[in-house]
Image (cartoon, rainbow, N blue to C red; front, side):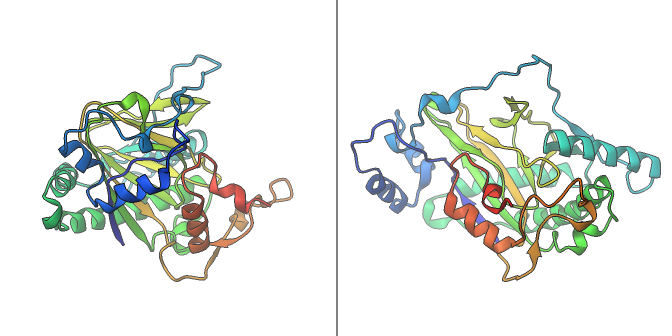
Length: 316
């Protein structure tokens, strides 16, 4: 499943005395997205995209600690058992404390990463009538699937489970791709690229270019995710943190990112997912009820990016 989108978040406007729904429909009917606004030379963003000032507040870090974003080196994990054990420990620590981490030396050639970013940019910068998918997408997603299988093994081991546990649950069976193109914004202080949310999949592999703008909420503080050449960002769920993140608007652009979601939410499966039995005990009972990935995704999509976790709906 492949979806392409020009993504910008929409929340409650500052002005309430206008027909916002009508203006949103008119914007959607142009079929050109925010790229069309930029091409038209807009100097001020439309009011449907303006966010309240409190959306930009950065919560304070009460301990005033220096935060170092976790970067995990996957080199040698298939050949060196000691290195693999160390890497599993790093994955466990990053997943429990951050829910985000970057991976380097992951096996996907840098030429493929660069061409994927350039392919997204070329796609969005074509005339609207002639946009079409490109071959690099298939090559990139095939390589992400291979990386995903390795990461599911590391995540399983970090949970103290058999390396194939998450793959045997079917977590690697579905992959959805969203290609984002954020044009330069004339008024970044009044809007967001994407508002605060947590993803609704097993985990996400994100490729971003050099522009930056991605932030994660860690220890009650928004932290920039530094664009690291050749690195991919991972988002994990459940026992590991399902961390909230957002994307800032920027006067510099365009910003290109490619998000690969490992999810079975688009498949017609009736398989139930819930707390992993091997991790439960009298001291650690189930916190969530079982649900299908499809029902969870449907709830997430119906709820929208309202700043609350979709998991709350399934809490026991």
